[in-house]
Image: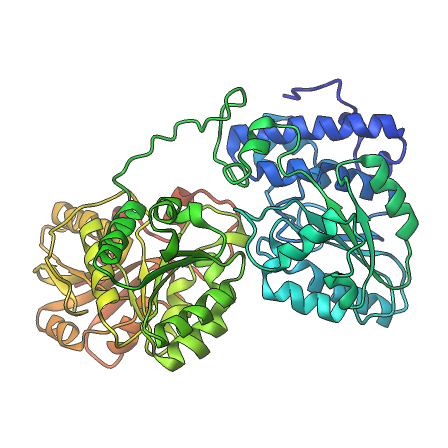
Length: 587
């Protein structure tokens, strides 16, 4: 049901409709969009503060330019909500029954006004350069506009894009949204230079954009619609690269987002009146807290620990560690590559770096994993979160980390099954000096198990001995393995063997060979992509032996906001489905 039938937004079915309104009406439309953004993210979660701060940019762009002939590329695209409201998708914001119809990032399948599926940072300028080069090559026309900012300038690809954009001799426009924030506070020397530009109204000679070859304009109030429309009219159809540097307020129009930009960068559902999260009962009994407890112990024992993250402290609850041990904590901004190579340098010089990454973001630094950490075989420790089959946007899938990490030599990828195992693995990783160690933090509910005083080896743990079927249940899927054991008991009336493999990268050949004595079927369970994953390694090992192997995990594909329960059924990841498969094997 349309919550606001009297909104002017109801008259906008595409960008051409934006041009019919007066400037005064456009300002009203901007406020209507802000209301819808707050209502929608309060109901289903999303990027609240980034979108509130850049609403006027979207309105001004579609008033002045002519999409899709003129093309706008949103960096990360988590700031594209207003753009979506103006390009035929307002129902996904104004009608709660249709919230799920529109994704949180740009998507060419949704609209001809979206050009890329983008959910990772620092890509917009390189994408824009590519589009501009293709336009020029084909002697076409049209403006190409990249929106950079909200922390996305700190990634290395942004500098590579700017460096190449600055040498062009044709139209390319970069809107630099300077809201003085990233996901958390901005990090690095770049932002000191931006501060100087703001304080001098864009007149400072210390101007990185001019140095790279851009023309330059500064807009002191990037939330002032009149100013944006004026400057966009001035630079439309420009024949050389230019940066429009705008100073905006992240979270504008919603006081709780203005006051707590970090919390509302991305927020779970919340109460609009109080800004408080809904149904979010936090407990100290979390895997994040378990990690922080171990790091705190090691710091107190004078280990030279440095906890490093790339602009996502909230993902791991690292603010607690920063507050207690500020000298043992470093946020490098959105710069995954730097975080890993810097950690390699620290490890070489005797420190104990612990780098925290999301599975979906760590892949941006694959070369550093390979050429810096693995090749040099240095004891960097990496904590990886959100490595799981999830219902996230296809831009944020976390189920590819096992294949891309275990494809590299020297890195041991541990997969704990419970809190105590996680802590013991982390202690061992910090005290050994032989190899890089990655640890996949479990993503399901906190589980507790037998507490070992030490973790000394990466050999498989045979937790339950049985016959006929051996189940290798990796990490988070160990509990699925336990459920499968019970289902086999109930339906097939025998006791299978249950194994905790400990590591996604290591093959315990002695344990695997022992299974050949009284098992006819090996089952692997992993919370990730099967292609190149743990199960394929087991299957390959048994390929010349008289035993059958069934691998269970995710298909190699991009899934876009599909419920996990649906994915599990699709991938045969329920105990009943697996037992049905076992029946067909005639063991």
